[in-house]
Image (cartoon, rainbow, N blue to C red):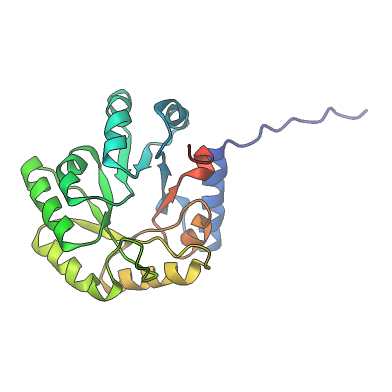
Length: 226
C-alpha cells in the first residue's frame, strides 16, 4: 500500500539565505559561523522586520541615519540583542547620531568623516567599529576610499583612535564580482585586516567563497524595496 506523500514546508527566505551561506562556506572550506549575515532592512517598516527577529536574526543594516532613527529605537528596546549596522554613505554632520545609534559603520571612506567620527566617539565615550569602504572599481560616481589612498587613511584612523574592523566594497554593477572581492581580500591581507564586508543579494555566495566575513543581504530576505 502506497504511503501518503510527505509535505515539506518551503524554507523561509531567512532559512534559504542561511543555507546558501552554509553551502558556499563548505565549498571554500570555511565554517558558516565565520560569516555574519546582515539583514539590510532599508525602506522596510518594523512590521516586516519583526518576523526575522522572531526567527533569530539579530543583525540588521540600514542605509540612512534618519530612517534608522525613525524605526529602530523601539525595536531595539523590545529586542536588546539586536545589533544595528550602518551600511550606506554617511555625511560627516551625522556622525554624532550614527555613533549613538549604530553598533558598526561600514562606510568610512575619507579623512573628514574620520575626524568627525573620532570626535563623536570621544564625546559619546563609545568606540564603534568601522569598515573602510574602498572604491574597488575606481568608479567616479561611487563613494569609497581610492585604493592608492587606503594605507594613509588606515594610518590616520589609528592615529585618531578610531577602530577599524576591516574593509568593505561594492563592486561595479553588471560585472563579474569575483575579481573585485579577491582584490579587497588582498588589500585587507596587505594591511593586516581580517574582516571583509562584501557581498549582497546577487553575489553573497561568491563573496563567501572569497573570504567575506560580513554579507549585506536585503532583497533576498525582504523582497524588492518599497
